[in-house]
Length: 256
Image (cartoon, rainbow, N blue to C red; front, top):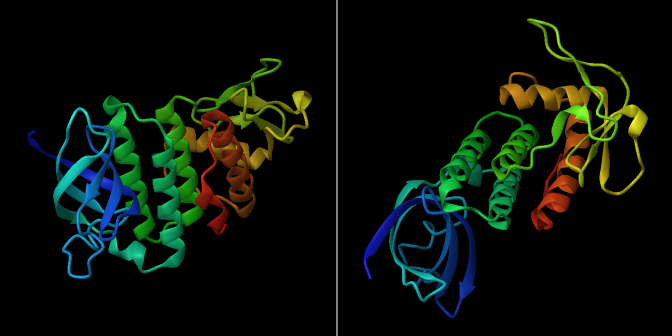
């Protein structure tokens, strides 16, 4: 067995036996892996802090084709994201981001894209940016990589155009009324096609316009309103649950 190494982000840890841990880490190029870290729970172990979740490290490990877990040999610290660990709310958001990644099935070929959006989100958490808006951008980017981005162009029921497009101007909604995100069908319902189900989430015109803006610009230049945040928080959770079939447990801890 050959010693391998990979730049990685630790996304989960759990106790194993008396002194060991099992960590799950997202590699930059090889997808997710899980491995045993010997002695990681010992007070004098050099791996106590460096094997914590949302730490960016280079991991040296040995992998056997017959074993589910790799055997971790050592770490080299790249970034501990220390500013995140200084704020409780930031820790909660970082925990949520890493849990979403843990819940996803990741093709090794797509690993660089997952790695990039997670690193970018963790860096954003360290700055003055809105935590809730950073979360929305991360979720939107995650949907794109997973190939499940909702269709924002036409109503999924009647197929009418939702937007007026003018050269040099931002798109404007044709109907300035409440729309819905259909979390099963993966698209928007226009005001004439609304239905009342637990799998649909109402979006006000301002929230849908904000989401459309993020689809094209993916930045923090326009600040979300509290209504935008509340509506997209509920909509994206329902969307993830229906599209992926799993519920992130840490979501309930977030403050919006």
